[in-house]
Amino acid sequence: MSGTYPASPILNRLEYSSFAPIRLTIANDQTRRARSNLTQRWLFDGFYSRKLTRAQLGPLFAFAVKQKGPFDTFLFIPPVISDTKGTMAGVPLVNGARQTGTSIDIDDCPLASIVLKAEDFLLFAGHSKVYMVTEDVLSNGSGEATVNFEPPLLESPANNALVTYDAVPFTCSFNQETIRTLLSAPLNHDYAMQLIEVP
Image 1 (cartoon, one colour):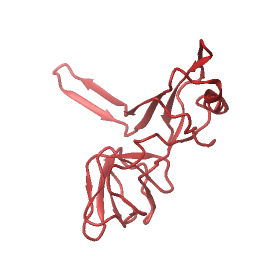
Image 2 (cartoon, one colour):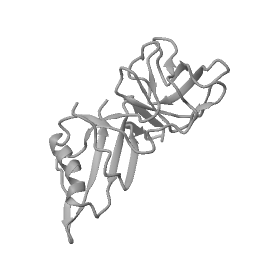
Image 3 (tube, one colour):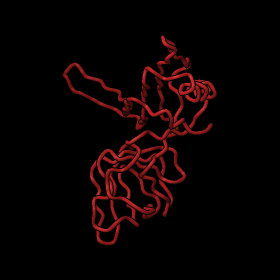
C-alpha cells in the first residue's frame, strides 16, 4: 500500500463501472447457462480538464510514476459517489458475527429512517473490498437495519465491525503500465487515469 490518490486537482469527469466476469454458454437447443466465479471489482476512469498547468499535473503524474503502473496499491476516495445519499450518521456497526452472502445486519443507525440508499458504497472494518447497496435501507425504531448489497461478502466481518459509508476508500492500482500526458500549446497538459479495485 502506497498512499492515497491526490484529491486535487478535482476530476473533471469520472466514469465508474462494475466488472463481474460471467461464463455464458448457449447449447444447440438454445438452453442458456451462466456461471459466475463470484469475483467482482470496481473500475474507475478519470478525466481532467485539458488545461492542466504543469504545477497541477505534477502531483498526479508523480504519484502514478511512484506506483510503477499496476505494481503497487493505494487508496482512492472518489468524489461525490463515495458518500451516502441516506440519513446515516454516527458510527454504525455490524450486528452479529459469521454473516455471509449479500445481506448483513447492522445497528447503531439513526432511528426509523432511510439510512442508506441504493448505489451507496460500504466498507467493513478490517476489509479492503467495497460493496454497493442494492436497495434502500430502512432502520427500525431501535436503530437496527438489514443491508442488501453486491457482490457477496468475501469473508464475514467481525461482530461490531465499523461500517464506513462516507468518504469510502477503494483499494486500487493503476490499470495500465504506461503513464502518459499530452502537452499542447500554450503549455497545457491533458491527463486521464484508469484504476482497478484490488481488494
